[in-house]
Amino acid sequence: MDLALRAAHQAGVFLRDGRPDDLGVAATKSSAVDVVTEMDIASEKMITGFLAEHRPDDGFLGEEGASVQGSSGVQWVIDPIDGTVNYLYGRPAWAVSIAARVGGADGETVVGVVHAPMQGETFRAALGEGAYVNDRPLKVRPAPPFEQALLGTGFGYLTERRVRQAEVVRQLIPQVRDIRRGGSAAIDLCDVAAGRLDAYYERGLNPWDLAAGDLIAREAGAVVGGRAPGDAPSGDLVVAAPPALFEPLRAKLDALGAWHD
Ligand code: LIP
Image 1 (cartoon, rainbow, N blue to C red):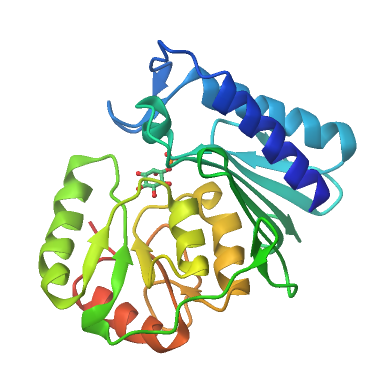
Image 2: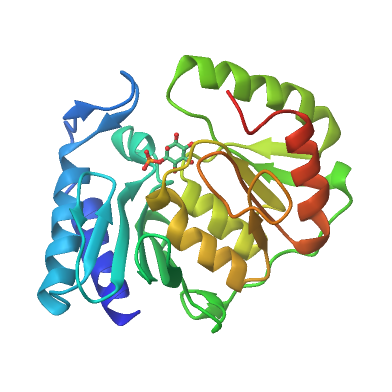
């Protein structure tokens, strides 16, 4: 936890104070709007370098290419900027997300840190030890009636998937209080943990988007799952909500086909 916090804060200062005024797109991935900046790449190098210096036998999985098997049984799962498009546009909703998993790629997340420098907030959780923002304990909001729920979601970078996701939103929005699209899955999951959203769902997340926020939400009392009852959250679908809201939302999303393109 200490190493994750120090790595996240170090990267956060670099990203907040060192953002070039003329920041541009360094590369694209799945589509012309799935972008990487030089700061994503530099942040990941800074984080992996710091962690490897202190724990040289650990493994790494990072959004911008970090991929080290390691021999210690500990794997660091890193999103150096979650909310890259927000960061590119100078919008504040972005975060550094760092998780530690024990037991390899399918192991259990034991530490999660989501550091949001522009909000002045660091969300953290250790397995079985609760969730916090800065030093304040986090607890999910009590589940409201479904029609009064404030949901968060996000959209992919491929047109075909976005069309499908918009159709799910079209059918869902008359049935709930409202829907927010913040642009950072890690922050969305922390918002569920903090009671700033009643629930969050999204199709298409990568492990680095999910790992830290998943633990923080669960340690704050949320259920975090996937498409079918008992499914773990995955790229197919992530659903995070207080226990009494989770199953009604999961079932609704399953019926709306939110799990496929
Ligand atoms: C982002 C996610 C967000 C999703 C975006 C993107 P990135 O991660 O945090 O929830 O809707 O499409 O995947 O690419 O900024 O690390």
